Amino acid sequence: MPQILKHIDKIAREKKRDVLYIVFNEQKNDNDLDIEKYLSYDYKEDKTRQELLKWLDENNIPYEKCGPTASENGWESYRGQLYIDVPMDEKDERYLKLNEHLEDEKGDVKIEGIGYYFLPLKVAMKNAHHDEPGFWEKWAEDF
Image 1 (cartoon, rainbow, N blue to C red):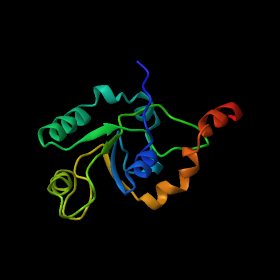
Image 2 (cartoon, helix red, strand yellow; image 1 turned 60 degrees about the horizontal axis):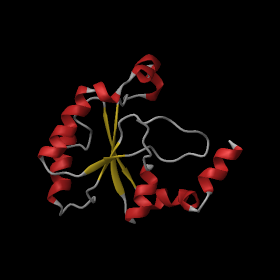
Image 3 (spheres, rainbow, N blue to C red; image 1 turned 90 degrees about the horizontal axis):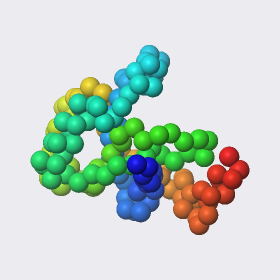
Image 4 (cartoon, rainbow, N blue to C red; image 1 turned 90 degrees about the vertical axis):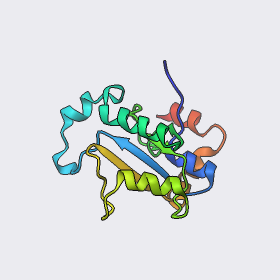
């Protein structure tokens, strides 16, 4: 069934803060991008994603589906991305637990195929004009 999901930058603007998000089927080096793997990816069948969702639920870390940063140059289908509804705060136990689960001591992601990102509000604000009433309808007409 079709779903309307918010882009991660829209979520940041609504929260009025920096946000964390996770992508799946992440390939370490864009120069070696495996197009076949990218095109055949099905997030519903991704065991790594399923395990992470289970872990998030077990650890009471809230999340929701989200789209990538909005782009006026095109769109892409949902690929399993998650907004993690935890502030990036060293005093927040959930944030610390999440980081410990996902990152090693150098700050590299420990789980292959997962991309763990931080989107600063300042960057998300570059798309604030997307929030104007009728923006996307007008964009679709002109696309």
